[in-house]
Amino acid sequence: MLSDHNLIGHRLTIALTSIAFGLLFDVNRVHAQSATAESLFADGNKLMDRGRFVEACAAFEASNRVEPRAGTLLRLGDCREKNQQLASAWSAYKDARSLATDPRKRQYATVKITTLEKQLSYLTVNVSDQSQIPGLALTRNGVSFDPALWNRALPVDGGDYVITVRAPGYDTWETTVHVPMADAKLTVDMPILTKTRPHPLAPPQTSRAAVPLIVGVGALALLGGGLGFELGAESRYGTANAEMTSQQRRDSLYNSANTDRHVAQVLAAGGLAAATAAVWLYLRAGSRERNLASTSIHIVPRATGLALLGQF
Image 1 (cartoon, rainbow, N blue to C red):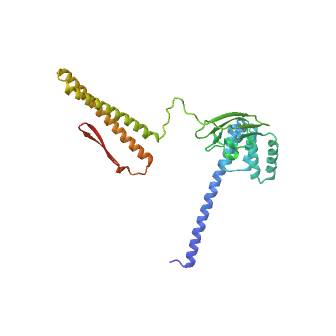
Image 2: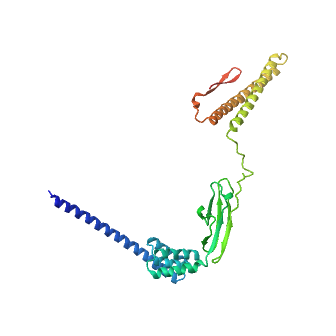
Image 3: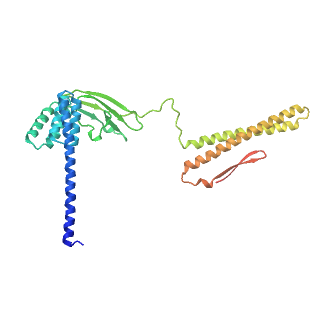
């Protein structure tokens, strides 16, 4: 068994070994990051020499994401400037100045910032208080445009900017503005959006509260029609019974009466079904929490037709 002294020494050795391995792995990870950043930086320089500025700037940006460095940002600023993206170059130089520890790099970045600030183009998107409706959302070239940036003159690179405005229940508004590369101050005033109008061929929307009423009216129409045919059948039965001169006419009246009674039964069944649906829709619309299990409606055949029995 280990003594207390030896046990403490053993635990200390394990702890120091763990720390050493951790430091080793961290160092290896840093070296891997540095190697990746250096490779991307070198690619950017090669592309710059070939005049392929778009690809070169992308390589410098990737290198800076892996390992942010003032030198990389200075090179990115130079690349953006050569690609005539003055606002992006200005932003890169500002980031480089904040990271730089070398006084020469800080001075170089400061000179570039001061020079470019005099050449920048600005774009303002004005959104008045009257235009700010619930759910209002703006995008600039497909990218969400934060409300904190509304009504502010923002430095932008030269080019075309598509401003899109959307809000639920309103027509989408969109405009395209061309910003010169340098020395421009442009403003886009967002109008008050107009509410979306229904398409002329679209079916009208019916209020939920009106649905039970419409179904109920249909039920009354069917029941009324059934009653009319039932009364007609009764009348023909009476006429047939009173016919004593012609058996053929009497049979015809009986057949016609039977047909009317069948039609009356069909209409009555449809009317009762519609009435049942109307009652159910009314109860459901009035109180969704009500227990409809206690409601029972039955269609019962009778000698003269159909009857509706219900318990509420």
